Length: 357
Image 1 (tube, rainbow, N blue to C red):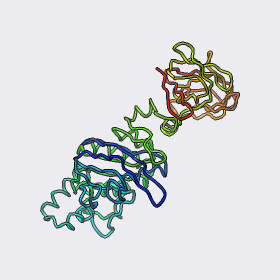
Image 2: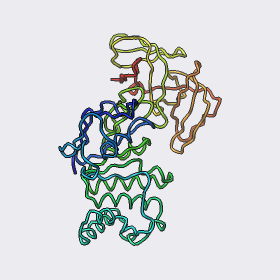
Image 3: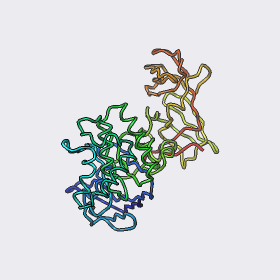
Image 4: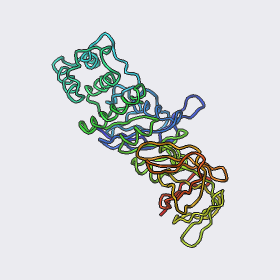
């Protein structure tokens, strides 16, 4: 295991800068996820760590050793790709052993490492099968096993579950979490799927437009998003946003929404003015009593234990609210909405977030 540090790294393809002066540190034994939309630079950043893309400026340290000028094979990291890239004519055992044989390791040592990987991945009974005899999830485990036998300082995963169906992604995600607990290795995981990042990672790096928007634990980036982008990108369904004119009244802020509704909150902002008010759907409740605002139900999603009610306010703003699993709300109904003001956020013109106290 080893810690990994990027210090002011940048990368360009021609005149296009794709990584812009990024610095971060992955702690020894940590599971870190790079999360962001397509084109945000997350896979390029991972490939720079692996040595598959050069670093134009800055430093890469793995276990305290500068590695930006080293070839991929000298960095002591192992990468697992989206494509399994298994040799179809070889058994699982030989697929795992292939790289070790190429570097001249003794067969006795190879056999021991493959046996250990099979035990860790709980696939001892599959070692003599060929890839065509395996499910998609089992093939991905073979690809991970091929990385494990190298005993690297760190594992790099580039969207490894993207080719699996929904049910298999869930099972394999659990297996990855269990694998990290068993071997306590340093892992970096690239994904555009926030569920994978939230459930697997110790910390998440949110990337946007080739820069870091926020680094934090899953609950930190969910509960206290640093920017309007993070607030909208993390969470399913996404955060509700409403235009608001905000005035400061003593230690409180009073927001007037587009439909004229007034919301009072304990939130510290430097000045009043025009903001976007943000609140997650689970903090907006359909109520039979007096609410903070009213809307018309447009779509009702019954999800068993809860119901998501999509509403439209009088000024046309869309707000998703939460109701009980036995909700009787139907499209076209007028509903009152109550906000949990402890979970309100304000976003200024730069996108910077201000959170309720």
